[in-house]
Length: 127
Image 1: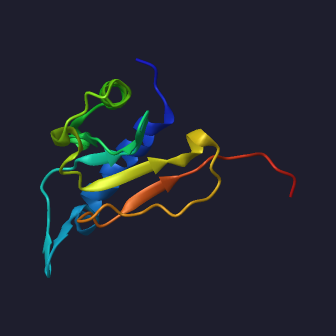
Image 2: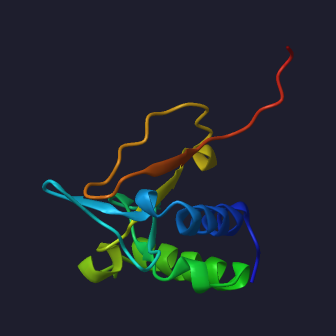
């Protein structure tokens, strides 16, 4: 398994979600529903557009397990075999526009989730 940056960010997000359960909660009407699991949605580029599959129980996976799951979900996205179940139920999202060179964007929260982490490219520039 080739380790990348995403597994580190998924693990860090999962740790933060355990420490701040309100961010892992979802909004249902006027109610806040606290989840006892951490399912992190990740944005994946597919031939027909962006899809957001879910890494189930991300807090229980190793770095290698997260990378394997990301690889499997990415392959399903490219093959067009992703199901609705693969994309349903995330409690927090991560989007990585940096892989396309993005330096700035405004990530959009996927309701009923409470938060999203937007990552971007880094460049060495003169100051």
